Image 1 (cartoon, rainbow, N blue to C red):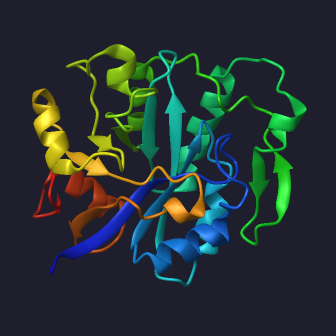
Image 2: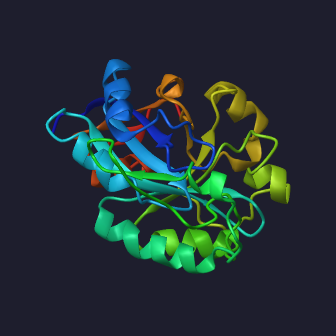
Length: 248
């Protein structure tokens, strides 16, 4: 089967994330991704996947592959990206995460910014959960939960000075079964290879971590695949059957 490059940005927030702009709603995300020449994206809001289904529906018929994702915050305040094949895979994980978020009152003005929308960008509600908070799950528990649901676990923006596994723990535990390490748009892959030689056994990816439409596609990773589907992406992360992360 012929393999070709697919351009992927697998770390994009929506208006549901507390730090996401209200303008970054599903149809706008799809439009921007197509304008940027992306083939595959993932919607990965903080501690929730409530807008992921809307993004999948918004992309129907466009040729853009959208994966449901989630960016989880561990009790150590480490961000871990979870990527999944279907909503059926991610929704049980979301419910577990909601149970592990602290039950603290959320300021009304803050709740208004946690906007749940449908595929037509119509507001359907506001998340009552404190999505900015750290869960009561440690990094090992988070990675295990992601894998139990068939997902890929990626340490988010490891070069950042806050909310990265290196900034929070000072190192990446050798027994933490991560599928990849993400670099932010602030660093190139060659720079990351030089800076993180101790973790050369883990593949490197680079995504936008977009919180507003203009940031979508500002960083991306090419994947050599037979088709833009989750099973192929998993093989690329594992470097099997010729599939691979280009440049990692």
